[in-house]
Length: 295
Ligand code: FES
Image (cartoon, rainbow, N blue to C red):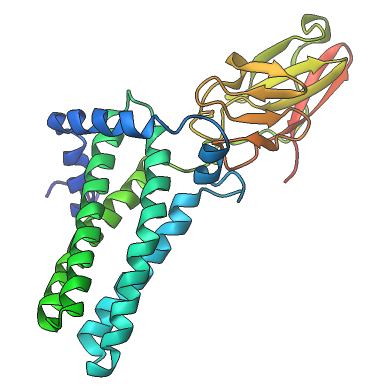
């Protein structure tokens, strides 16, 4: 392994997903998966699956259920003894039930990643395949146990945990290294001092503009004589809100249709699950000034 500045340049846990991201043959299944995921268009179902109603991305929340139940079942298999065999079966069954909504929410989230970011699309395909393998193996494990083949059921359970571990690791990479499902404004350094961004005369009523404040793009809009300012980068996947549509005191993102209230950044429609950061805005000495609104 190469070492730079005393640190490994390619930590082992990072190598697998990085290499998978370079495997071009994965583009074909990614395209097929996209056509399935694309059937869930903007609307109530998409909002429900994205976690808009919850105020939090739903997929990571749901993954705790199959991972938790299946890990517990495996521990019971390893150290629980005969008394815990029924409990292990129930945990496997519960994990299987939870795996369906978990998979659908993951597919919805992956569908909104940029098609241009091929590494995310490819790693997502392998993440899904590993988890499907885990589901199939746990289902086979449960079936074996029900037939009375407990030893076989436990072996299949261990194999399933292996697939689940690979799938979980790749899912973690997509979130922690690639930012899928993360509030896309979270690392923006927002200016808290009043900053002049344009001349008041340059923003007519009904007009909007993307301006830069210390390197951060801010959307400034004037509607019915009132000024509004929001982060221009959409919290969902980073779309430019200034290129979206403005209607009824709201802005709709041009990328996947999330709609935010200009007054407070709240989410009217998803798939965004987090509110859009909002700025205070005023007119001072003929200029429009903004500053980050304290949380
Ligand atoms: S980037 Fe997806 S809705 Fe804005």
